[in-house]
Image 1 (cartoon, rainbow, N blue to C red):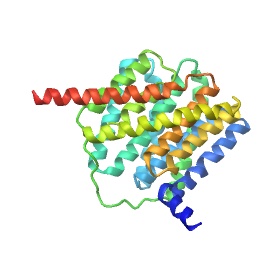
Image 2: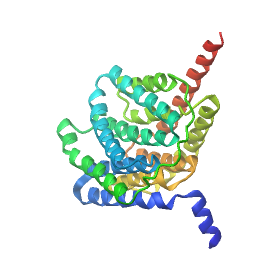
Image 3: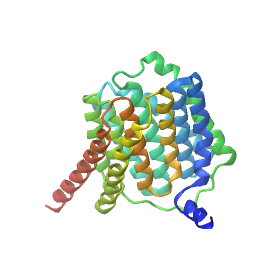
Length: 312
């Protein structure tokens, strides 16, 4: 029993997972009770805001600013989706700024990432082909605002606000995130990809430093997807394509953001849940593998070309 407890403490963050559960479980219950996707989207925003506040060790004012930026980012990216060039510039700039912030202090990278993630995912979800109309999207705003407020209240009341000593993070290569994420965002918006947010974030998440750091992150994501996607396809065989299961899979994916300490098992779990979700709605689960692989190849190619040009 003691060995199991040590294993759990080593690989899982019980503190953060419990706090995330306190936000996502009520959102899931509200969604199942009639709130629908809007309630679950509010829960996703709440979870991402809490992750940014906790990992960034933000004070009350900083946490309020972060929640406001995440909420407004959803509106901005949803509105820019119809203009691929503007959408690409906004996503590329957000990824580049996040990298620059992380170079100043490592904890700011997490805060920036978990501000960009909900803005990107929820913005693309609102604007995707066949997605909710303007009226339905605006009707979800109270849920999103409630989620941001719930995260701020939970963090302000009993969160980790004591910032550790300044610790600079890895300095990303200038312009790599802007170029790669911008190009992937343009492809997603121009071709109206149904899961375009996966492609964009797959590029943004690997722009973490120099060639060695990027290569390692690409391998973690590719290997995690190779494990998770087939597992998710098998999981879908045991489930029915009901709204209850689809919402539960989405809530479980949010929990994996906090539960695992190591990146690869967490990403494998999210890939499995995403593949199961896609399989249940009749989509191609292999899209998850394609997005991860394409983004990794593009970032590595851009970095290699940049190094070649610098050496000439």
